[in-house]
Image 1: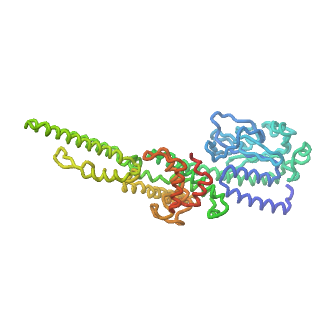
Image 2: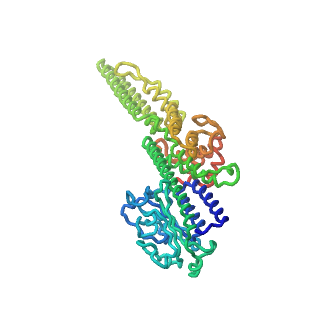
Image 3: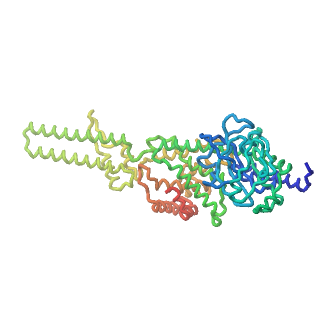
Length: 558
């Protein structure tokens, strides 16, 4: 191997160090592979290239032939982080213990714009990429047009060349290895250029401007592929851990919704609104929100906090969570049966008195008076039942209804044991006298305790450095700027900005949700008006609310 000039050696060393730092900090698999391919081409002088990643074989076992990383897309590339991603296999050098295929992930070309579609290849000698995986060795082909590429492999697929006029001449295929030396992917580099800045367009360019990949380029590509393999392995592991945790979060939300089906979808909508609000705030350049910026990890914290902010409801009695009216069903049924007993008692007492008068041969007027009294008593009982049904609704209670409830609370009847009993028990009266909503003060405290349960649950999870604020954000979603919130009564700047976003999203969704049994859905314009009144009363963040309305964040869930 000829001696490498000192300046070139220094450049390569510095470039490898810079690449190593960049690779070690990138966690997004798609971005990592794009970075790997770009740096591989730069350091070797390749005009074009592609990346393949080893993955589990599809159920049908079918793959598409190698087209040297080029093609015409049937659909846009799908990021691995999206729903429906293929699961990557854990490959082994040489023969694999389970079927595996190479997933063509991306392509780059400096000379022509390239569209492509993703496909898979078998791990065998029918392609250069497959052979590199099978052997775990680099394959350096000086000129793919002059001869069979490698004994036992197919010749170059010319479909892309014929369609675009581009010509693949020199080609270097190197495997990416994990820390344990296992092949997990392939970098395929195409057309090493004599002059790095040259654009290959004419037939003469491919003849005069393309040279074979030399031993030094192969050495540098292998060095970079080794770094890339470890980084890719870490990124895959990171992605698997992230997906595992997302599965846990989804399962937790499912648990919440099974506990309180009346708010199904609420947690996900709050997360969606909060993340959208944070993303919009991140783009604000001036004003009080100008200095605020949210990284990918920050947005994930907000998303998880939004998804889990109500998890503590699993610690609240189910009958309280789903209470649609002021009285529980069993309470209302007990009152109905009690009133039925009172009705029979009134009728029986009236008949007893009439019989007594008939025995005494009293005047007809006396019997008529008894009948009128019975009618009045039954009418009053019926009016009392209608009062109970009216007061039982979770709407705003009018003052006359409150006053009438106080009167009825003093009414008595005689039970079967001869004891005087109230028409309405004290806990029934207390529930019916709730001025708005369906919860008594004690029940409201039980509902509010869900925040404490949420925090207790979230604090048991080792969130790590990048997600450490999730419990703090979730804990403060019911705090208000004026200190009137709960559970800690925080004020102003003591409330995390992310929690203030959750507050706006939570209130809006609670108002507009159509699945709440204790209230009808509020129209969007009215919900925004209620939120505005909360802002004016010093409860919610005015700057965030302006963005929420101005950018129409609320439309993300309607």
